[in-house]
Length: 71
Image (cartoon, rainbow, N blue to C red):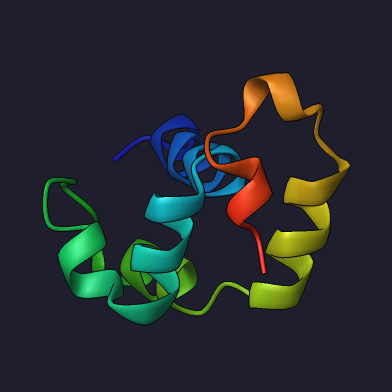
């Protein structure tokens, strides 16, 4: 999988609160539709929840899904 696809997944996690929650609680299921290497799965499975939340909150709410649902 090209690196830009991994970046797309991270971007989706930052802008889509439900996908972010799925990724953080059950990465295997959230990533099931993606053709990832084991290394990429490891990186995405071990994303830092707090850093991802800080990044997500720094984005304009017009580009995020469920921004008001962020804990």
